[in-house]
Image 1 (cartoon, rainbow, N blue to C red):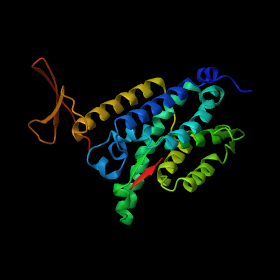
Image 2: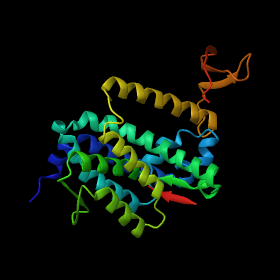
Image 3: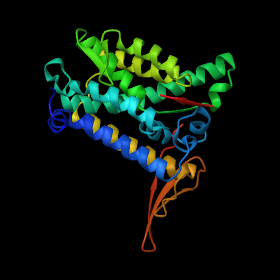
Image 4: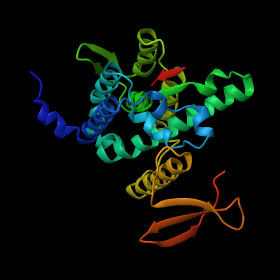
Length: 269
């Protein structure tokens, strides 16, 4: 007999919180009847300034089966939170989850850009990706390098050797879910290897908080700029040089102005 669920939650606090967040977002999407095209990541929408989709696409799921599959795999990977002796643990789990969300999203966009510009495959201009699989596959990859002898349990009955789990799971996913994003899953694997091999390293609480802060700033300003959400207290307007926008925070009829420097089909993941 396994441990009671309560004790497993205490052993996997970060994983449990992320599963709760993804489940809550899925429930909100279903309740508000929000379509995947409103939260998903596509090359076309990002070019139009919807940079916030890099974040929303990762935490959104289009169906309960999609959600259950990703969260089941994530729950099995929660053992990472207890592997402090391998340089992982709760803190690094949170640090590198943030890295996986952002870098895998950017890598997908980079792949789309290459395929569109080099091979003129216009399909990738409009394809929309949603789901947390990029992060799940990233952590599978990291664990396969850090602890290759362990196994990954899926749905309580499928057990995979972790050393092959990323690619086995990728093939399995593409077979049972034909619309699954090959590039989205592959991006998570690539970023996972980059972290596991030390190509991306040095994340501390300071850098994680700094990165989170910049993500929040870009998220809010891209939401405002794209018109996806109306922040009544925030306006972006041009000043002397049209290429240099200013930011105005409006409160009680008074304005605080600050200059800023300018910043140059669906698939399941």
